[in-house]
Length: 195
Image (cartoon, rainbow, N blue to C red):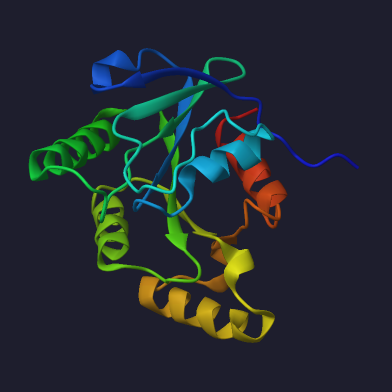
């Protein structure tokens, strides 16, 4: 049985919301710098370099737009957190993310990526609270799950769920490197994209 796959192609890197253009519906990936968003996109698309990965946090500086079938989009937002760069750039990224998420009526789901090993940061908690306040639907995706030793998985899962006040079953636990949980994530994305 072949693994699930979301057909994607890179379209553009948009520095403003109005550059994204029309779509029937869209899903969004957000998360702190270095949480593994690019690797996640490569994993769901089953393509090695559709999204450029980097060991330097903060390489995604605009809204990266990916085309899915039937005029659907996947949008990768700039990472928040400890990315290197001038304060003005970080402020611009934050404003870009907020204006985008607040203004697009076609957003069906935001996938909030949290590092399973590190656990939720203050910025992750702030983003979750902001999405909740704005009534924007979101799903927690716990990335880098392979970095947890089997003996510590239960404890890390429990802690993450406690901090974010969320049920264990509601979290998508994934590893891009080992393809753990990717099928479930792809099926969830396809559902929200109505594919």
